[in-house]
Image 1 (cartoon, rainbow, N blue to C red):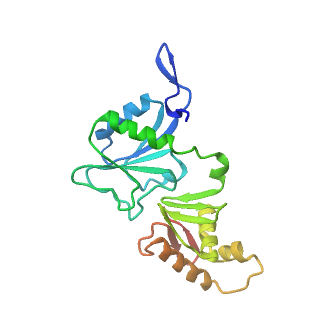
Image 2 (image 1 turned 90 degrees about the horizontal axis):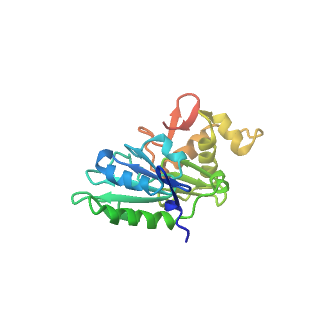
Image 3 (image 1 turned 90 degrees about the vertical axis):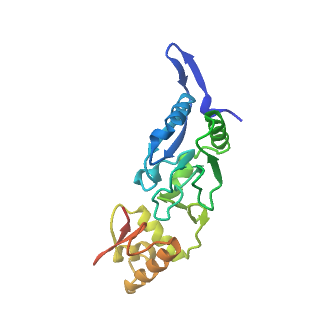
Length: 233
């Protein structure tokens, strides 16, 4: 397998990176991981650091690996454990632990070389996401829709939706702002549909339940009173 993340050319100013892979690190105390960040950068990884998992920008990044720091305490996620796509490596300490469904866990602090080697293995084992694949995906926080396969995942868990629920979620994720009930009905049934708008509310309620979304404190779908719905901030 080609070693993409360490493809370097030595020059007068040190190593020049011809090819890079992207790693996102989330830590409430990023200074504790400065040594790891520096080492990964030296090895030609693009490293982006965020303080919490609720950063809206995360849904659009599609990293090759996400590293979540759980060495001090669990981050405030409102139940959103994982990013919209990619592998997740949790760093855990003596008094902390990763989520029950975590696939990859690594003790920290520990030998830097061991951590970097583990990260290299995880990155190399994942094929890069092509632009065509990205075009067939919609993502928000830990929700990922594969439009080609017509599947929905929340983190690593597959969510079974009805066709109506799937179409509603797709419409909301694709929209740029608020969608009225009428717009939602037309996007699903077409302009010739004359049914009541309360049917949208019924399906939204069911969709929220399956996503684990609390309408009183929404993390995914926000109600805009008197108008319709939009994706939460």
